Length: 400
Image (cartoon, rainbow, N blue to C red):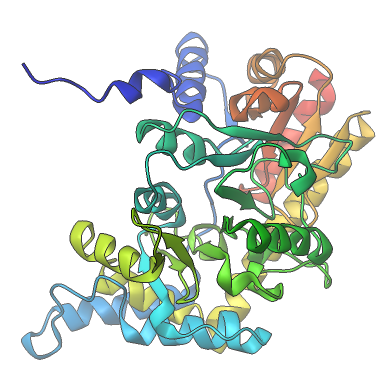
């Protein structure tokens, strides 16, 4: 008889956001008149910017005519988008990334989960705690349950250091900055310590830069490749989900440079880029032509101005939330270069979640869902309308 992959039994039976949805549904069933405001899951609320919409309309028209119709596209992404990414996201910031080192996908979440397929089963993984659950669950599904957790606390500013794992010797370290869930950022000095460590130990950094567009502090790096030596030891993931509201459209990309290598079964150094190319061409048919034309428009002068305006809007929401929670006596992290505010609630995360849901009809995210070190915190998302954010703040004041 068919046998299941027993590694699935080792992951938490309920995904964090599924549990949140379940509790919200129960509350709504008991209180059908409740006007619930969702500041939990990091889903955007503002519409696609006009430049993107116009580009996608033109792309639809292309598909309506035989001479301009597009079927299967290149799995790595259309050249027109990869060239724009290389020129704007990197070359304009004095980072030399070749277009053929860029792999367009249907989102950073998928890539962050799929990249582990390139590594051997005995690869040792290190992640932050609290952590974005995808990093952990996808590795456990693949049979890697000996995961190193790097505690991120108020004491270390929610940024781990290589000293935290000096005796653990992981092969791969996941870093996410600006961080989900804490909203913390990492300085160039902090990232340099990780790059130096990775090169000294022949380890790999998987750098999730999904929220880099929210950085407004000049000295905070947007890319791991701003750090000298990162070309040899880092893979970077980026997303258009939060940058341009593509959570439903689905598009992102991963940078795998030619210098990044690992050992094969015979101890011979092997480039990861051809392996990732092989993986994508085998298992992925590429993001749609319509999607990639929309993504290309993000890089036009109009598109760049429009998406910056939307991000500024969310950042103002975050500032208001952080200011309100601070005025109520709570200590907060994030909300400055990030759309997330990480609040020390001084009690059980789920207890606070339930209290706010039931007394204020506002959905947040319990920090315990991101790992043991997240207990006692909640994450509040700035992705919502200004009206809903201001209303939530008023409800917080009454409930807390």
